[in-house]
Length: 402
Image 1 (tube, rainbow, N blue to C red):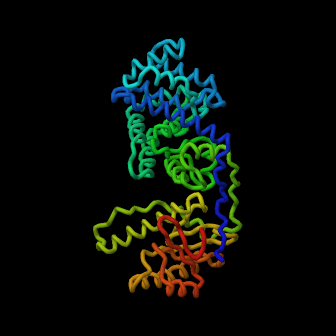
Image 2: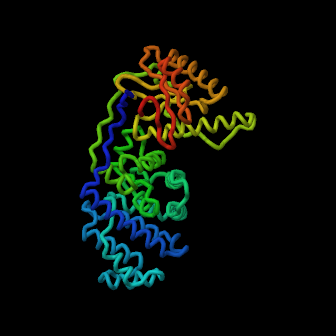
Image 3: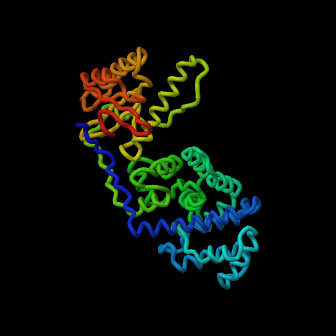
């Protein structure tokens, strides 16, 4: 019987009626923002005032998102951008269609009647944030253009867009506070993303990040993006409601501390493409495969277990089950003579690392390989009390469950 891991204990997305209504409002907001962005020409897309308008469209004027007062507030912002008075929805629709030639009157009127708005961004921070957008308009436009694209690698897009935003630096508010641009800009970035993977950063998602030891920064954006597809969360809008309305367990402190714990660090992303000129081609290939294997393990465990640690060993899952850690050594093959040699090496490494770093013995051992090994290898490791992990496509399987 496989040992049952403690894990993070995260719930599945409830998809309650309240959540469905909130997600529908977010989709209306995305429809408005994407329609305006698609209708804009290149000159408009680089206009600081147009960028500010899109940012404002992601905000809600009051806590009651989607309310009539918020709709009127948003339409007044649109009228301000167009430099016309807001007398009625019909007159504003005429002016909006005149500015965006690809939109007709009925399309504009339909947009203006929609109730939109995602985040109740602090009113006191809005003027400073809009000034910040104007001062960084070229980079903001670049981030908007990038996030509105459809590249094959969604995670890479999140990394690159988040890097652009993080490079802005922090917003200096009138009060003297220095605040992150993510909270003010991620609603519009999420709406512009046609793949709906760019996460919204706010207090609820910040609390969610703390469960895995991440911060509301670029790495936090990427980590939140990788939560999509897990726990029945389908996109960034459901993720926002998942963070806002679900009940999450408080992080449980470990009942023990591993020896020499101060020497351990979080497992970071390993390059799967870079190589060193001095290494032989075969060694480079093995290193790339090894890095891909540990990256896949890191992604699988993200939002399922606590953050992976590393030292001289490949990976350590702290508290994988009550009172015990799991030490993992990754090998790129278990087949043939070379694979058998790698398994033997892993056996020696695991016992050496356990002796060196875990003298109290409260650690279990496992070897990670790319695919299910032979019955002979399974029997060998079972006789030594060493578990096995392998991937079946993108799913992690093995003699234990993580």
